[in-house]
Length: 110
Length: 113
Image (cartoon, rainbow over all chains, first blue to last red):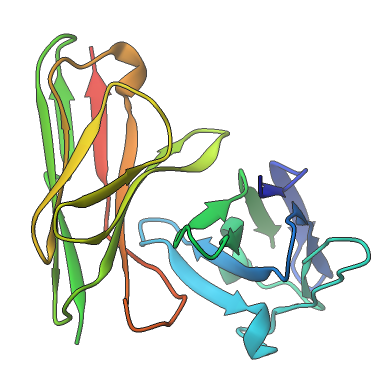
């Protein structure tokens, strides 16, 4: 069965420091991976997806199939990045739903 | 544009009482619909999903049930609530046309006392 692991419950960094939120997955097949974010008092929303290979709000995530990882990175953290971040895996094909990790709370201190 | 609504926003219920949470989507047709529970320290757990009217898939055996009486309506129910049913319940939708992005509702905070 597919599984998503986010080993850190809380990550605290200072403004301007680099950020890396870890995500590892287990899945047989070609994974489709996502990062969702939930800011305080806002809805859970999509941040980025690996298929798009895009950078959103300065964040990037690279799929590493050898290490089965999809870590979220940002070179210089901002205070407004403070939020709950969830890594998610889509599939398998017959199950049209996302499997989420347990989430990592990012705190960016001034 | 598409919107998703959930109500109520908060609910406090005694143990053993029934439950009905409603989710509706506007601006799209034949969406895939989902119920998740968000528990502290445990992330989002998929409870049910539906690809069409009357079609419900259950992910986790539990005290809850789901129904989809209309194309854009998804209901989460229980006949008798347990203390362990407390949590934050999120409804989500995804286009049945192929995009993988799920869009989430504002959620319902349920406290069972």
